[in-house]
Image 1 (cartoon, each protein chain N blue to C red):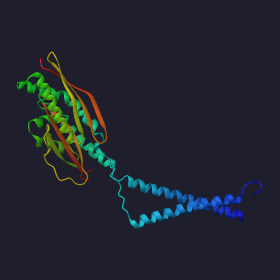
Image 2: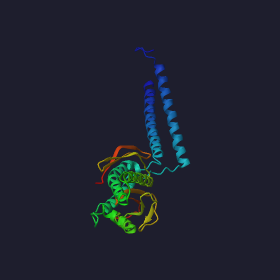
Image 3: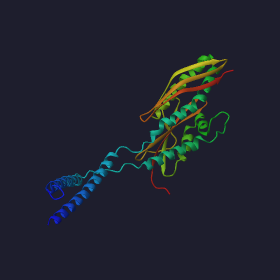
Image 4: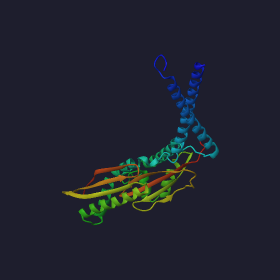
Length: 144
Length: 158
């Protein structure tokens, strides 16, 4: 009789354990499906990397072309380089607004070495996923 | 106490306590499942990541197909897209871009010059369902263009 009681208890324990496992599994499944709502794939998750690639590739030709245009329009070389860099920074910032990324160019400096101008800037690119800082964004313009 | 020195009554009550705990958990589970059945909360499946990724790849491929080819006047332009934009053929540039999309994907093309606002060019239509936008910065002759393509699935296809 005692052996039968112990067997019943064991079976009940086993059955209860199985039900407990099923309950935990079902609740976990339900919880995961609820938690997964509102978190679809975000195509903009690598936008900072793409934007930084674009900014780096565009900076040199953009500043070079704009400086050449400003010099051709009769501007002073130093002023032309500085104006080209500032306008490029403004336009890149607007471009960032279009794609949901903040592009801020700071510490823009122009140095002249016998007519070869080096325009440097520090770029900060950020969105809600990531932030990147490009310490030395440089363009070289030879006005000789 | 038995011959081995164990208190069988104590063990028996412990097992009963464990069983009761498990019974309570089982009852909670039954309550939980009954509640979900009665309340009928419809939890939709999230959008498949593959679905959005395929949209993104379609848009990026279309941009590459239009931007990558060399310009007819390659001495003065960085690429085919830049050449079209510089010439003011914004509709033509956008139509080339949109025609590069797969047949199961449709899109709208948006272009902004320098710091100006974006405007829609080329053919296009009203988006259906979820859309995804891919942007590209195109430089040509000192002008920066923001080219954005907004795409969505239309279904069907091979």
